[in-house]
Amino acid sequence: MLPEGRKEWQVRVFENRYPIFSSQAGSETYGIHEVIVETPDHEAVFHRMPVNDIALVMQAIRERMACHSLNRHLAALMAFRNQGLRGGASLSHPHTQLVGLSMIPPRLAEEADTFLSQAEHGSCPLCLDVSDPFIVVEEGSFRALSPSVPRFPREIWIAPVHHEPSFLNLTDVELDDLSALVKKVLGALSGFFDPFDYNIVFHTEPLGDESGTFHTHLEIVPRAEPLAGFEIGSGMMVNPAPALEAVAELRNVLIP
Ligand SMILES: [Zn+2]
Ligand SMILES: [Zn+2]
Image (cartoon, protein in one colour):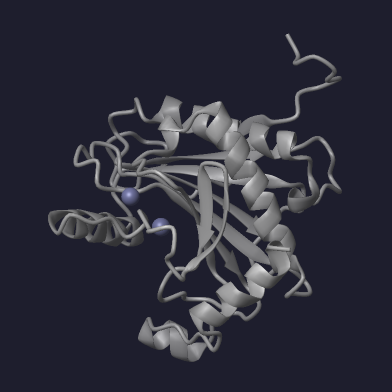
């Protein structure tokens, strides 16, 4: 049955026609790759969609992640959203992608290691004190913050205020808060970029990680400049925008 007042489903999920991974379970390159179509409206702009519709996308991501978390061939799940040419979008209809990998990808593994080693010292890099200068704004159960060493100008992360390792555990109410904040932050960021191309990455604890030390988060990464030779050759990122200046500029837009 369709939700009340809806003529058709807002969000649909398909297998990706051009999957990154092999569908052969047991293969080293095994994985799953799904496309979450966010809205029937081809022209919709994600950050201008109603919060309720963004929340339906968040719920779909959580449900599909929960489903694939039962697949014992998978080691990690990750969702991502590519916006615009520089964000690597190959399809213009608004969509998010979900992948499940048979290995933990290097960046997620590095983050999980950092969370684990910080926990040994009794802290979590995303359980911030309310006065932390890297916090941009808080919306209910979520807050937006700048990583202390952002890779890209005005890179912003969004994380639950309270420690929560898994995106799968977020409640509908928390996903509503998250959606409202994502909309606000994307809206604010869009004023600094033309065109506003970006990626959103959804990081959740690796499957089978029972340490509870990971802190789930979204990374919003504006893509004003393509990666150039230095970045590709060195693996180092050049970011001319200091983190705290970006925080101050965004606060000016977001906090009246
Ligand atoms: Zn935490
Ligand atoms: Zn992350």
